[in-house]
Image (cartoon, rainbow, N blue to C red; front, side, top):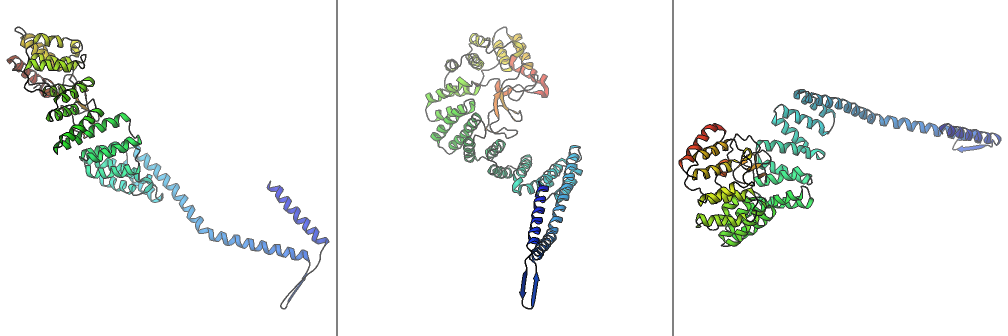
Length: 476
């Protein structure tokens, strides 16, 4: 196409030259004392040469003017190439386990790559690998001041402050991160956890409402979190003396988190204080239908604390009827029968398949209840010892276990006692060796009521079992 265009231009010039050659004409120019006589063709040629000369001069001036900018661009391109090489070498050094070299290359790349956040991120990681917390904080802080990389810097600073246990600073950083990226799940969860650790339950409720509107975390998880937050708010209302407000809040909390027995127990105790014993019984019965728990049975008996053992056994019979096939129903009835000296009824419930699995899978609580039962019989001393020995190797009883750090706790809390995780404790069997008795065994042996006076066999065998366990655990 270019050749055709050039031929067309040449053809036009030839045609113009031929035209003016055939029609030479004359041109006379008089200007002051100057007079120019020439032909039309020469005049046109002179004009063309003048235009070409001016065009060439303009190109020359433009080229001279662009020279400094071209030099700067070439320098930037060279610096970018060298910066990329330094960055690559730094990444390779970090992967090879040489953080000092990685940090040197990152510093060089930061000088060569103007305003790029990657060298700062590499330098921060290298500083952390070397244990230079101040250096890592400095680099992450520099990242947090750059709009395009502020979120990365805040995440690094937040991780550092969490490791150092500085909840106040971590909370401020999480709030900044949440404003930048409100739809990131880990930011929402971290902010909620930090607000819970700081006791800012009103702020946690607002944060949770925003999380639910955006759908940042699954609906069921958000619902469960809301139940825990409402429970804590009800505790605060109870401390202020607003029992009715506390009862209303904890009722909503129980509806949001029906699997947490602690919330149902708190609801029932508030209703008892308000004189609403029938409502308290219904709250516990409703919780027993979905999540039977020893604490619920204990709270159920608190409705009538003056009841004798037989009345308590009958009361628990009504509670167990809400979920008759649950293992906890049989265990609760067996304990109540033992307290009322109804050994036959206790044996019937402990022998039920739902409560009494095959011997290798018998729980410690079941083994200890069987030991109590056998010890109550006239000739059951030997069998009681066998059940106590079996308790040493039995699988652990359920307890509250943290989903984050696997810590065990005898009581439920909104925050894990070890790691501070929010809404992380759940009632389940811990994942550890069956030969070790956890601390929860002390609270799950007789969880419902104060036991009747035990015979010397139980006390002596328990002491013997404790000696055999050594430091591995305790039986109380």
